[in-house]
Image (cartoon, rainbow, N blue to C red; front, side, top):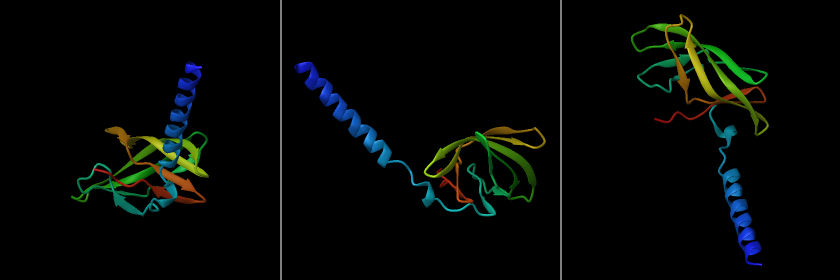
Length: 125
């Protein structure tokens, strides 16, 4: 009897935790649409242009330009994992690479695509 009470209490607690996680999920529709030119997550005055991710299977990808404050412009590409959610696709775990092969890395930036609208995650520093 005592074991069933403990198990029952554990199930109720687990359900409450899962429920809170579901309700705490971000509302991706509330993110701002991606602008033609926006600040890089890396900061430093670098701006990103031409960002237009397209979903193909389990990936989202796009080429883009980087505009440095000194006027230098370069090109790169980024590929994300595409995760269906909230009636659209969330592009996460982005990996970018410069077109000249001289630099690469990851980005915390995420993109939500739904009904043809592409929204970018808020930039946190």
